[in-house]
Image (cartoon, rainbow, N blue to C red):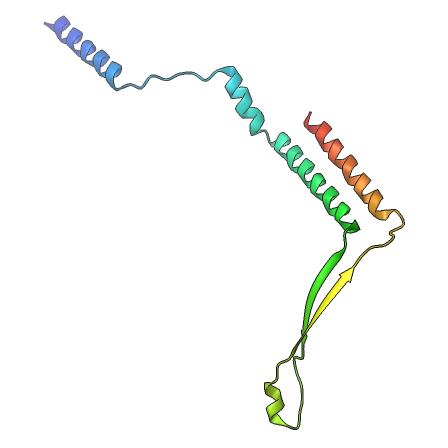
Amino acid sequence: MQSNYRQYFFTTIALWLSVVAVPVQAESLKSILKTALVRDPVLLEARADEEGAYNRVEQAKSLHYPKLRLTGNSAIAEKHKNKSSYDDSIITPGLELSLNLYSFGAIDAEVEKNMLKSRLNCLKRA
């Protein structure tokens, strides 16, 4: 009687585990390594440095481009004898165009420096 009870108990447990338990599949080594490389802090830092260097190259190149500014001026405080002139809030618009004609090679040197930093960061990642 005792053995029947044990057999019934173990059979019930086995059936319950086969129905309820979710089969677990081990990840392959390739997927684990791929995930580790994607999340590696050293590689993430190198990627961020490379992107920053690229942006600095583009920023340095933009120093050759003309710049256009739109301005507006208005008086903050005025003192008049006639109180009705205080209501006049005149804004004077303005437009300013500037172009760097010659920088004695400083812009090109900045571009070259940032390009070399970008290449260095590429080599760090490799």
